[in-house]
Image 1: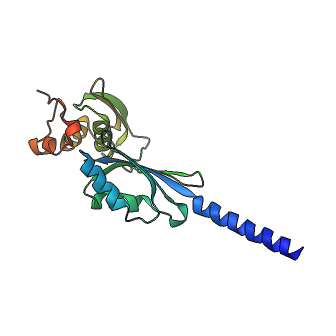
Image 2 (image 1 turned 90 degrees about the vertical axis):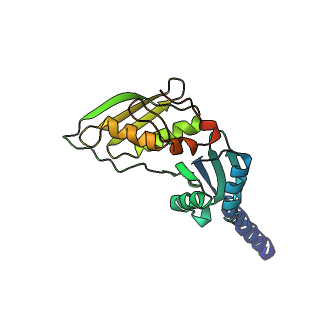
Image 3 (image 1 turned 180 degrees about the vertical axis):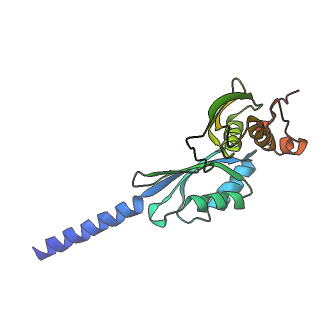
Length: 207
């Protein structure tokens, strides 16, 4: 009887240990600057410094990068942001789905609205051509204090942005987008900013 009990206890702890080992957090990052297979290799190599990383997947065309990592190591948003930057690239958006079901996302800014806020939604023509362009344009827009929402559609090359007029202006948003490398009607990206875009993002420049 004692032998049976001991066996059951050992089996229970073994099962619990295996379950703990299987608990993995899921990471999804959109990375700017991945222009070729060599870029993807460099990014993956840098992240393999995190011992225990699993199921690494990189889509060069969209810049989507995902992997799993043991939940017990509690890898943070700051950790993955710094690792992407160490690899020589820029994280645009990040999402962590923890093993316990909780979700963490990167925040663009700390815009706070008040009773005097004047919220407007406007559309801007912004040149681009792919999913990476979309993420870059939206990040640049959402990075402006006062912007509450930004959505760019590849089919129309149109950015719809919602913002508080008491905190920012449409002109300021267009300048930020241009600095990220994308032409708008009011502001053009510099030659260097356009040149620095990945090959898949080389859109036809606005006249």
